[in-house]
Every structure is written in C-alpha cells, then in structure tokens.
Amino acid sequence: MNYTITKPERADVGEVVPKLFLILLQKSDDLNVPLNVRPPNQVSEVSVDGAETTKAEFVSDPYINFITTNSSIPLVNQPFSNDDSNAAAPVQGVSVEDEDLWAADIEGFDGQNYVLHHLPFFSACKGFDSQIPFYKLTETPGDGQQGCTLVDPLNGVFIDQWSPFSQPSQVELEEKTDRCEWLLECKYEEEIDKKPQPPRWFEQEAGTPLFYIARDASTLEDWLSTVSGEDTAGAISKFSSKVGSAEMVPVAVGEPDVPIDEELKLIGIPTAIQLDITYYQYHPRKKQIVSASIVFSEYV
Image 1 (cartoon, rainbow, N blue to C red):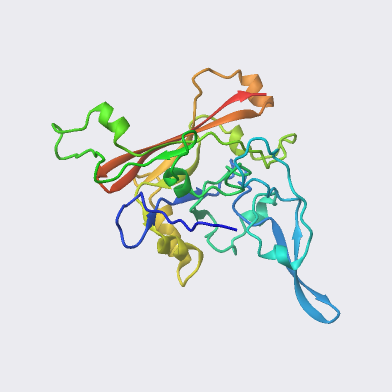
Image 2 (cartoon, one colour):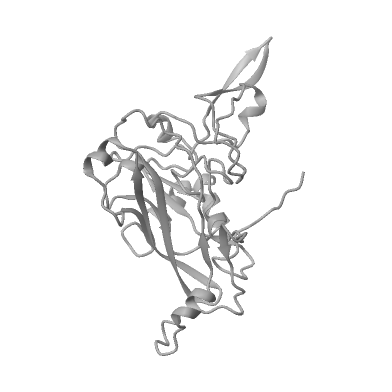
C-alpha cells in the first residue's frame, strides 16, 4: 500500500506553520442538520464474560465505498458489522437524530456553532468519501479533467490594492493564478423520499446561508483549540463573533441561470449542485476568500 501525506500550503505559501481556510456551521431551527459532521456510530461500554469492551452500534449502514474516482464503480453502501474495530473507524455521514448532532456536550460544539475543516452537507462523493477537506478541493493538482491548476508563486500575479494602475490583465489573471474545477459524483445520504422538518440543505430558499467560510486562513492549532483545550467556547467565538462582517463569508443559496418551476422545487430533488468560491490574491503568497454560493438545479 502506498499513501501520501499532504498538508495545506496554498492559502499562505511559505509559512512555517501551515494555514487553511476554516468553515463555520451554525445551528438553525430552519435548517436540517448535515449528516457528515459526526461519526454515525453510537459507542457504548458493554460487558462480555465479565470484561468491559467497546461496542459501536451503527444507526444504519454507512456509505464507505467512495474513495475511488472510477466512474465505472457504482455508488453503493457497504455493510458494516458491529465490532470493536469499527469504533475508531473514520466513517461518517449516516442519519443521526437532530438532538444527537446538536447535543451541547459534543467536542467542538458550543451549543450553537461548529468550526470545521471540511465541507458540511457534501458527502458520499467519489474520491473523498463522507468528508471533503476544504484545502483538498483548493490545492489538489489536477489530472487534466479534475482538480487544480496551481501556479508557482514566483511566476504568478496578484492584485495590489495600493497600486490601481499596475493591475494584471484578465488574460494574466486566467493564466497566472490558481484555479480549480471539480465534477464530483455524489450520493444523497439523506432519506430523500421523506419530507422532514426543518427543511434540508437542498430545500432552502435563495439567499439562505448554509454555512460560512473564514475570509482569512488559520492555523491547524486554531481549529484544534475549538475541539479540545481549556477554552473551546472562546476559540469557537473567535469565528462565530465575526458572522455578519467581511471576515466571515456566507455560503448562500443562489438562483440558477434557468428558473426552476416552484412546484417542481417543492416535490423534486436537485441532481446538480454547483458550489462557486472566489478568492482575492492580495499578495504573491497570500489569499483571502471573497465570495461563495451554492446553486441547485436539474430537479427530478
């Protein structure tokens, strides 16, 4: 088996301590919970012949067979047995009760906010499984069909806000800046044949923010301090307190180019979801997130 260890490096190139863009997910009474935030298993201590052991009870079969980008392999859920080896398995994304997800005693949750390093809601995607690390979307070199075109910072261009008369041309911006394009095949982990309350993420009205991306990159320690340490609530508030300011970019539902029939939106399910994110290269080595939107289309 061969594996490669990667780390974020394009948000702030050259930093001794790697930085990455983090995501804020807020609890809402009008938005159903994402299914790729918590592990799907309920861990309990059981006694077997007088010996204590850990048992992982899965709510339902987790989707785990999505680590390949081979389109010839079907998206199918793989059965898991309830044994000790599964308790620590990094499998996430199946149905959990709303009150379980938003329980106040969960690490990294202050009762209202999560700080994440992966995209919420987007799960069961080929090549990524149930969690898509945000930096992998923005920093994985492409293969000609998918991924990113990454430019050497020494040869790239940037926009100098203090020098408006020496800005790069549109051609230079297209050829000498990082850009990414992905076409991912994913599978809904929600039970799409049911109509829960509150509405799910793909049922939200235009203008509704689903989550937020921090404008500026943070260190891994910044994220770790939100899930462990003496003051996780304080660490989380460094992000949540910025909602409503330019420092926290909302990822809001946008309108499709071709209007969708309202009745179809009411009873249908979108089979195409487009996530657009723009950034500002304000320094040869540094980026900021500028805007983001999600558009649902091709309802069936």
